[in-house]
Length: 234
Ligand SMILES: Nc1ncnc2c1ncn2[C@@H]1O[C@H](COP(=O)(O)OP(=O)(O)O)[C@@H](O)[C@H]1O
Ligand SMILES: [Mg+2]
Image (cartoon, rainbow, N blue to C red; front, top):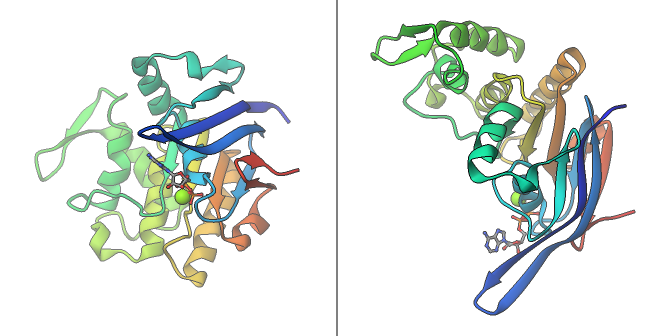
């Protein structure tokens, strides 16, 4: 399999005055094109910290991350923002949908920046019609074609999480990063969310990195690694 991401000797410390909290202490990890990688580890071990750094939302204290051999740790803030918008989709534990927008609008909005053909919705907001079409197709693919006009408050936890997955896919990212995507929903709903992830991976060859302490999730992954004491355990 082709290598998509290479993480080389990644360290991350947080500082409180003179006190250094060493969270990541030399993480080495390769992520391959089209795989679902689960990163497991106890609460507080640094899973979210690692995912944020892979997602360019935070910078490492030391070490490098290469996307297709390009060292993104050398990027400026402006380059990082552009790279993040183009290349990375995020799914968080708490879906973070915008409450005043419908499922369709939440998904379409992420695709709005890059498209020029605009249409106006009933609230007077302007969207790309391409983004709308794409959002509709993606919501269908996560089993929500009957929920396009629903607001987040009118959806179940699992449905909201599936909207969040559709939203993460709208710009065809190189990788989707998911932080405890089943952390806030019940077992049965989690299975439906995992079904969707697996289906998208198989059909679209979408690469996923999922951090979790849910062992059921790792059963669905192509590969599972464990974060222990700031490193990937052997
Ligand atoms: N921005 C921050 N400032 C200071 N400490 C942080 C920050 N983010 C995370 N930490 C600390 O780093 C450790 C790892 O946190 P986190 O990555 O959220 O763990 P996990 O996601 O595995 O539960 C924790 O001790 C946490 O308190
Ligand atoms: Mg976390």
